Length: 482
Image 1 (cartoon, rainbow, N blue to C red):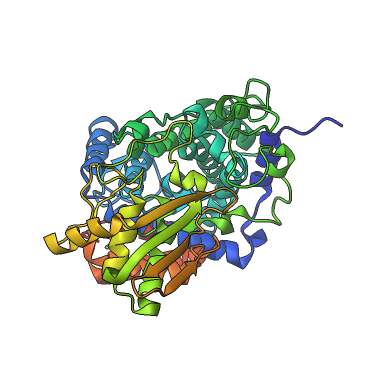
Image 2 (image 1 turned 60 degrees about the vertical axis):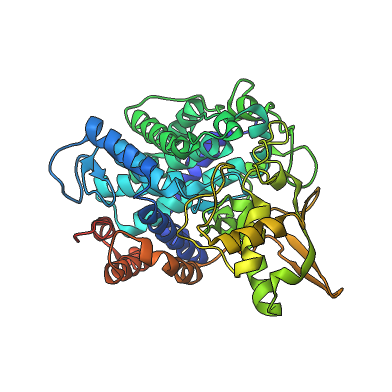
């Protein structure tokens, strides 16, 4: 029997999905995803790249008087300028991306950088209710995560960044859902987005920062895909799995052969992309990042911090530390195109540095700038702490383990007195619900452009999204003078 094209099945699912069909855990997770993207977006709004993105959008796509609500365009967070929906989403997505504190699905994709800005801009412009937004976000995350799950490591092996490549599909689905397109229209939005996808890893490999804009540009393309679908333009139904389609272009095979896999065989079943839709929710496997460092370092910092507290560890007494991680986490962005080591010997993301700093100080500051680049100095420290960190780095060994899950580090510490301490994560520790993520996000409050009491109102408004008649209050609360 001939298989229904993947884009058609996904389009049918997104079109038919209702808020009432969402499990409570999915609704809670969708709210957490909004809260996380907005909080880290507010925190990243002052970065030079965020300001550059805002200036470019305002110069090219401003729509005049500032206001919030339904109608032409959408609001640029913090600034308040009314711009085209795609322009506002672009500027807002950059703020979410710049400090590497967004959400993460299987390490190499970050759905919230694309889907939340696209969803909020579209919901604002369309006058959507909170329930409509939450439903569209759940649908978009499901599309992206399912299309990406088994194929993620193979994409950078072919020179492409996985996050914008797969994220464009989810952002297109969310936008099309909020625009109330029917199943055929949503299918076309996904298919057109597949054709519009792209983004190179060369910038990350060589140390430039163009990746900070890649997801944002994919967000624009996703919203245009949905807008064109709304005008009746069609994409190929087999745009994903066709012989010359998305999977062939971005993974090297349209039948599921893989170049790399996090774990398991180098073969994926395309039928799994749409298996159990509406019953098994991949969005629940999305993890949260709060430290300004790549995703694979997040559980390392958490684990090290917990071990320091549990054992009252004095880092100067460490003889040697061994950190085991999934092998792909040590060869970012791809084993085929590894990044040159930093001057201190660390690979991309500077895992040695992040681990040493955390073992010495007990934590890592969330309001520091992103330290993925080998040229970054890392957290501002005294000369004494910097010297201790450099010395401890020489006693740290990073082991890339084949078959070990992502976000599942194992840390073994040998002390000078011969004692051995071991801690381990299993990969699901950072899959927080709304309450846990909101608790951790309080650490950002001193660095936000809005007052603490206003931030509390913002979080409360997001928590009550399922009862909101629009997203206007949430958007308004991103503005410092609200």
